[in-house]
Length: 243
Image 1: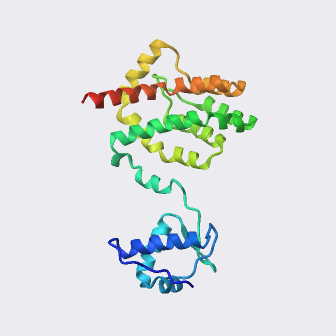
Image 2: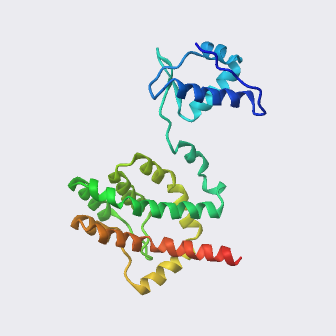
Image 3: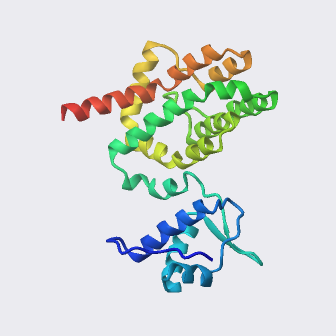
């Protein structure tokens, strides 16, 4: 096996081993499913102790990049693109600015997948959405329960056919609930104001546009459906600027 030279740098030895291994995987065209050299071979090629190598490899395993399989040893795996993000999205450890950015990103993302939803949707999808809407529960302020909200929008993400987007929806669920619970009074006030202006665009309304194949009408309705969040974001940002 070729020599994997480690340079004298200010970063830790484990960091250097990690970086060199990443380069080695790329240079040798390793891909998910590729079997890796064993620890003895890698340690000798790097010129480091196996304890140092194991710490670097443990980082890859934690990120889902490497797994050990029976009779095959270490194998390179496809890491979850958003896996590390899941660990860092504890709402209690995020600033208000970050949570508001996540909320804004979620809105833009769902509106952005409208084209894919219409391209991929099937009669079976319509049937499932209809069942979700039928079972949905709505509060007095036209707010859906957490389960109803998550089920409907998760199905839309699934229909879009992008696994990373679906994973993102699952990851931010706790953040969304935290925001709604923390600012419950503000959301309630906005909902009452919106009710006086016009009817709320419900999941049932969105489903009707999907059934009719009205893409543009659906996009407009989705914008209105998210108006409570947009108004919330505008008020929070205005308050921050004036503070």
